[in-house]
Image 1 (cartoon, helix red, strand yellow):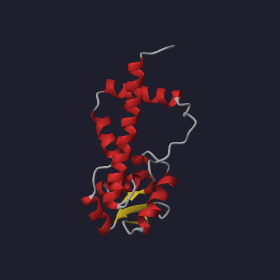
Image 2: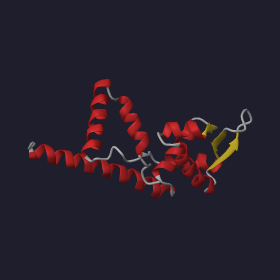
Image 3: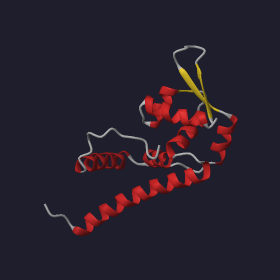
Image 4: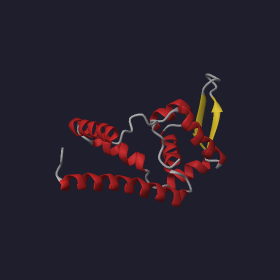
Length: 154
């Protein structure tokens, strides 16, 4: 089926804008903090609730725990977080910001993930459903349903 060429152009332009916005947020975060978007997002989430279980952080980041562990490895190497075994359950690992991590979060710019979460939360149910369905269709159009989602710029 042939679609309106102007509408196809608009779709391509909007996809490009999304990638540009994600790239700009990432570049700004990396330039001002030396951290990737996912690393900074993890710090910002930890700043809201600390200590936090690794599994809870993974859930809030919409990532698998092993992926978050990799992000935390890099943050711990930079002395921005510490991980300790929970006193209540030694099998549980809790993460918290260091003093240096707190300073980084206080001075850091917004990250794309936080902006996106706020924007999605501000949508009406109908608008949210449109975005959800549209993203599913785009994934299908790109034959990308089989891909495992990875964090942006980790």
